[in-house]
Image (tube, rainbow, N blue to C red; front, side):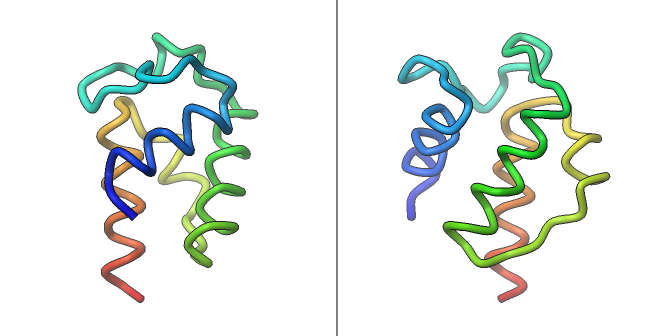
Length: 77
């Protein structure tokens, strides 16, 4: 899956408009909260069969941080 493909999936999962997620966008701009973290974790588990530490997700500040976590998970597998 491409980076853009992942971002589109994440937008859909978070009920955001297409194109809303850009790498440098702060997560605070999209009202990132605990439900966002749970949705992200479910998306990663469902599409990539990977488990990411929720604390790492909660520490993310930008969209690019979320992408980096998925990339690291894919490299580990």
